Image (cartoon, rainbow, N blue to C red; front, side):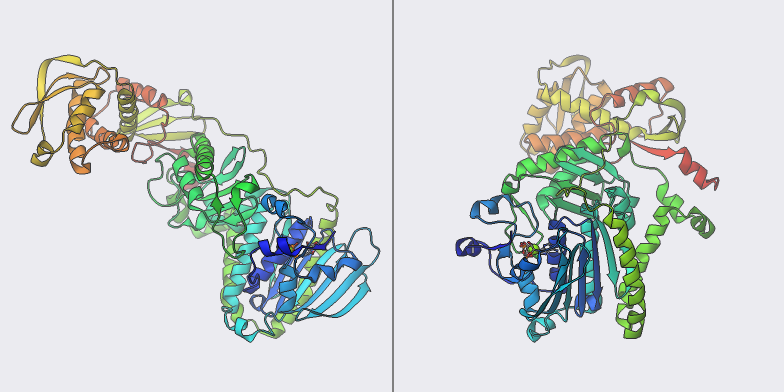
Length: 605
Ligand code: ADP
Ligand code: MG
C-alpha cells in the first residue's frame, strides 16, 4: 500500500533536494527497483544521463490505481510511522525520489503488477501529469527520465561533463552489482552494453568482472557471522583505498572505523599500502545513522569499537590461514610475460581486464559519439535488453533477499608446518621447504624476529621470571642521552628477568638474564632495548610493545649461517607462534611459489 506520510513523520525526515546530478536519479531509481524485488535491472543512459536515463526492472510493479500516488511527495509504501525510521531495511524510505525526479525531467513510467493483465503508462513533465493510460507491458517497471533539469537551468550548470557523469553512474552500478550479486545488472551507455552480470549470487565472479584490480590481489574469503566478503593477501596491497568497498546493510559507505578494523585484522602484516577488500557488514539498522544526506557515503556507527573489533577479528581469521601467505614472484611473472603467452592464456580474467579497458575507452570517447552512431546502436541495445529480460523472467518467483551473502566459502585451515620437507638453504639466509604442490621460501631473519618477538612478549607479560644468574657478568654501553634519561627501561628489563644495574661511565652491568634467553640474545636485546627507549622516550605498555618489536632485530645475529639442526629448531619455533606469517614489522616470514607459477615461468603452462 502506498500512502502519504503524516506531516510529523514527513518533517522528521531531513528535507532537502534528493536529485543533484544524474547519478542521484539513477541511484534512487535503481534502489526502487531493488526494493521492488527485481531479479534483473537494466540501466541505460545517454550523455551521462543528462538527456536520457532508463531503468527497467522485473520487480513487483505498481498497480494502475496507485501509479499516480507514487509521484506524490512523501508517498511511500515502505514506512508509515516514526518508529519504523529506526529500523530501515529497504533502501528508499523518504518517499520523495520519484516526485523529485519527475519535477525536474520529462518522465515516463510504464509499470505492471503480476496480477494485472494490463499495465499503466504515465507521462509527467516537470512533475505535472500529462497523460495516463492503460498499456500492455512486461511485469515490472520502466522509468525513463529525459532532459534532466530542463526546467531548472541553474542546476544544469552544476553538472559535470558527460563522461564524468557517466562514469559516476557506471561506478555506482558496478557497486550495486557486487552487493546484489543475485540480481542481474546490465549497464548500457550511449547504446553500448558495458557489462552484464550473471545475477547468480557469485560475488567473486562479479568482482573479477568489474574490479580486476581487486581480484588480482587475491580474494581470501572472509566469512564470520555479520562480516563477510573478500580481502587481499597481506603482500598484495594497493597504493590507494580504491580497492576497498564496504557495504553496510547494503549501502556502499566510507568509514574510518571499518578501515581501521580492516588494517588491524592483518595484525601488522601490511608492510606498505592499503589492502584491497570487499566487505559486507550486516548490523542492526538501529545502530547505524542512515538518515544522512543521501549523496554522502560517510556512515556513523553508534558502537564503533564493536564494529571495528568484529571486522578486525573476521579479517584476522581470514588472513591467518594458508590463504594469507604472500605469493612469491607473481608480479615478475606477469610483467615479463611475452605477448603471445598473454594472448594464449585467454582466461576469464584476461577477458575481464579487456572489458574494463573498454569501459575506460568508452568514457574517454564518450564526447566524440555522435547521434547517428547512438541511433544505430540503440536498435542493438533494445534487442539485447529483451534477451536478457527473457532469461530473467524464469527467476521472477524467487524470494527477494535484502542481503546477498557470500557463497558458503569454507574457511581455509591455518597453515600446517608439519607437511613441509626441508629442501635447501641459500645465501645463508633463505630456507627452502617443499609442500605438496608448492615450495616455500623462509627468510631466516624475519622468522627469527617473529620467534623472538613472541617469546619476549610472553616473557614480559608473564613477569614472574627470576633472573638466571651468569657465571661471568657482562656490561652494555649506551649513548650519553640514553644514560642521562629516565630509567623506566631498566625496570622493564628487570621485569623481563634481567639482573641489571648502573655501572657508571654509560655502562650497565648484567649479572643475570631472563631464563628464556641465551646470553648472546640477551645482550643484543638489552642494548637494543635501551637504545630504542632512548629514541622513543619513556615506556608505557604500547611503547614497550614497540620497543620489544624493534629490539628483536638486535637479538638476531646478522648473516649467521644456520645448521640443519638449527633450521629445524627455527621451523619448530615458528610453527608454534601465534602469527607465524610475518615478522613484527610486517614483512613476510615466508612466501609461497606454486608449482604452477614455476611452470608458467618456464612457459610450460
Ligand atoms: P520511496 O522509495 O522512498 O518509497 P519513491 O518516491 O522512490 O519513494 O517511490 C515511491 C513509491 O513508489 C515506493 O514506495 C514504491 O511503492 C513505488 N515504486 C517506486 N519505484 C518502483 C518500482 N521500480 N517498482 C515498484 N514500485 C515502485
Ligand atoms: Mg525510492
